[in-house]
Amino acid sequence: MRLMEWLARRPRLGDFLALGAGAVLPLAFAPVEWRVLSILSPALLFLLWLGATPRRAFWRGYLFGLGQFGVGVSWVYNSIHLFGNAVAPLAGLFTALFVAFLALYPAVTGGLLARFGRRFRLSMPAMLAVLPFGWVLYEWVRGWLFTGFPWLLLGHPQVDTWLGGYVPTLGTYGASLAVALVATALAGLVVLAGRARWLALGSAAILVMGGMLLSSVQWTRPAGDVLTVSIVQPSIAQEDKWRREQFQPTLDVYEKLTRAHFGRDLIVWPESAIPATFGQVAEDYLLPLAADARAHGTALVTGIFVRDPTDGTYYNSLVALDGGIDVYDKRHLVPFGEYTPLRGLLGWIDRYVVIPMSDLGRGTGRPLLSVNGYPVGASICYEDAFGEEVIEALPEAAYLINVSNDAWFGDSLAPWQHLELARVRSLETGRWMVRATNTGVSAVIDARGRIAAISPQFELHVLNAEIQPYVGVTPYARWGNWPVAGMAILVFVLLAGMRWRR
Image (cartoon, rainbow, N blue to C red; front, side, top):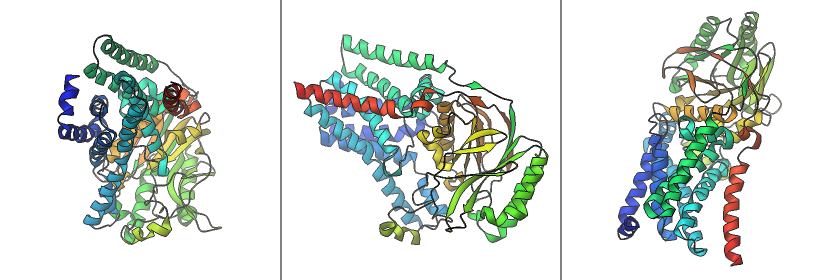
């Protein structure tokens, strides 16, 4: 408690510590992977929230968010400036506004938690019990509000830790709750005394041991023969992709690399591999190539734009060519990258940020394709950030395919953060994933979220590996996010009800 009193007399130091705690949190994620920071960073923020006024807790949450997202999603600038053709000052302004908006989430969380604690006169131990549930509610809301941005969640780094067992059981938000509970226990070691301190330490130990025990459970099992797969990574620079003179060389590269790997069970091309629509290249290029591949026992799957001839709508799609044509249209579009929300108010942005194929239609079907006689869970780019959407392909899906064009992010943290998200999805579902990208990082991920094969970044490369189809359902794939979100909501409802009864 002396530390808390010392910090209370130095509020500006506490504010600075909140900013620093947020700034170091992205180091817990790929590619740095200092996993322990996913616990230490929120633990420090929780300490700074305890005893703070609602206004000060809001401010410290905001500073934490500025640090977290200012470092963790700085790659947005690359996408807007280098590839969206926006001038540097405007790209910097858009990035700053995006970070400032995201920082409101932890700010509002801190302010509301402090107000809740004061309104219901919660003791220090009671506030320690409440904080983790408030945190997981904040992450959950950020995952769906305004189409959602579930990036840099505390559960993501746990794919490699002792708490990873909570991922297939309760999903990413369940793992986030476990991390937040451990972080709160660490905070309790500082502010509590006597038996309460030992209780906090014991709670942390139980949570860690629980994660270790759950990690040993095999929720899904292999089914069927091992499949051979080749991932074509052409490494075509984003600034060259849509140039007219690059069109034929692009076709030649894909055809050459694909024919060299006929005989594999599956060949996968990345998102929007061909800078044209399916209808423009189907008859003279894709269908003959797929027929030759099928004659060698090979299925071809590619990301490509598809135009609906009835209404002219364009879709970002994944097409499986395996004796027939099976199509999945992307359902979760990227705001401003693939469509403009509130176009009547925000359409002016199109004059300053120029992105090809940025007015797309939204798919409506289930994320399933038929490949090699197996149902396959399909996702395109950003969709693999949403665990609740990926599990819609289960229990049918035998494995997962994700295609992306991470060239949009340049040489930044984003491609590695995105790969980490894919690893979490494999662990959540208990399925292997084939992940094909334009410039990297392409990878094959096993059903435990471990990388089985990986490509070099920014190199033309064909990644050859084997995958194992699986059957079975993890608890998370069965129940989704509602058990964790419902439990967090119930905690606050019960506390409020108990206080009102008194």
